[in-house]
Image: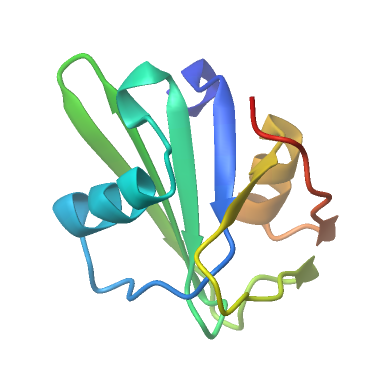
Length: 110
């Protein structure tokens, strides 16, 4: 379940979302996101029509994706040129997946 994740990171740079499990896991690893320790990475496509959430449990990687017809409604996501991520809450994750109004505020990494 999504709710067993203890830390969620929104990836703030453009990632080729044709990548699947291994490619996205490598992107998460570069950012220092430890998928096997309850952390998850959220990737957003350049046109903001596709979201992918990557996490892991004790048996392997789990990839959840959602495609919007017209982009993520109300999400104010600006992509950075440098490789980075920021922590978001579970409520912000649910807003993002449900297409609600979202503004993401940076949180310090632990």
